[in-house]
Image (cartoon, rainbow, N blue to C red; front, side):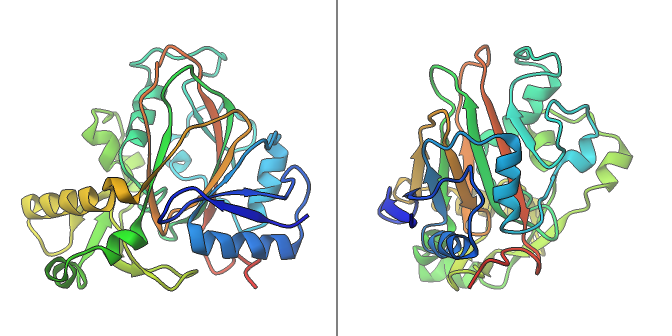
Length: 292
């Protein structure tokens, strides 16, 4: 079988089919997926009943995995393999957590427009999210194309942002939302990373407007001016015509490129169970080795 693609949005995102991801994929298949990611930045795979091991095997086809904020939290993990990131409202005892639980406080930041691990160097390349248990309403994931966002900038704004860089900090969004119980030692484990606001996507060669809520400061600007400009740029990047909303079904696997997109989760009833597993690939020279 060969990879088949059906566009889901006028700008980006496609539904992918034709491959069984529960089985090992060939180098040719991996190259085809990379080419599709360079074009669409988000791929939706329906009906993929992946085990944890199968998801890890598929993800590592494209490079080394990133565990993100697990370096800071050092909390007991519900998922046995540390390379899997638990996107759920379920605790170690298997029960749905209360809305004010540490687990949910940490998850709330996922509802802000962000790029996974933009606060790290290296940052994240692909993220892969697999749906296991879903609530009766809400919980969609939205994506915005940062390449299209750059293309749509007016000339004045483009001239302003071209030379700028921003500092991305791991705990910025969590502290912003009141999740501030971090020690000085934990804060030191995640030093900020600095990225140009106008960057070039390595796969497509297109320029991107690399913004998001992890960016706490534009270098060389006052805090007030920096935050107002970043807010305007995020608003521009996430205008409706550049956003795809994914409505989950059990068995979905969605892959997105963090270097080319922003994403956010949407509200759902926290009293209902929601379980998804994420694997994330580091953007390193060793990553994406399947590119032809």
